[in-house]
Image 1: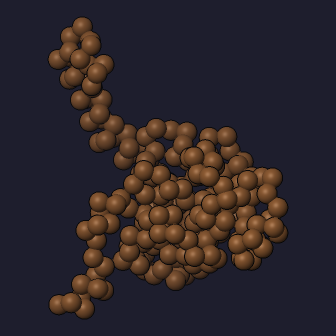
Image 2 (image 1 turned 45 degrees about the vertical axis):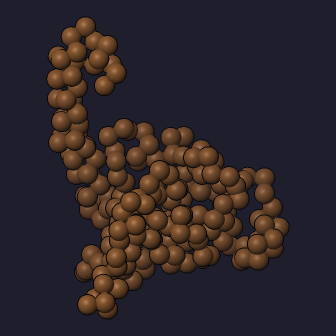
Image 3 (image 1 turned 90 degrees about the vertical axis):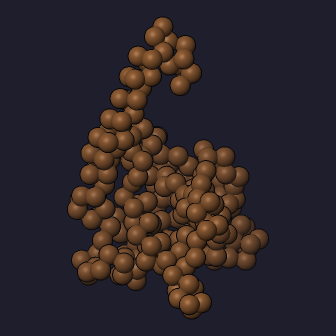
Length: 208
């Protein structure tokens, strides 16, 4: 808005900006992001053939998992870290061993200012990719490259998958399907404002 105020004709600049934003939200995001994410070749690639019900969480996480892990820097000794925290070594992973490390635009935990070692939820998918879900702003952000090289991409297939799993759990927190217990901050999939007003359906039914 500051750019509009300082323009030679602020009213015209504001009108142009409103038109740009309307196109952004009504056309660009739905068609250049959401339409492609919802395709069988995108989100559909995460669904095993056995899935008949979109909210069948056991089936959805049969080939995909949310793994509680300790992410460490590249120079860390995996065995030493596992011994220090008393956890199995298979749940300690170097930052460079995450799939995010293979594409320049995909952020790593340290790119988000997360101090390592850090307990994080890592999505392990049937394709073999392994992307951490990073606490950022109001919730979690997937570190896959899809979202991070185009500004209109507000959702990736992994985040859509996580949202479906969270809705099936009727929870604001993603489940840990394998691995270590992870702090709620690193599992909260929606904003604190929503979290403060959330009442699980199962709980509300018991109080009727």
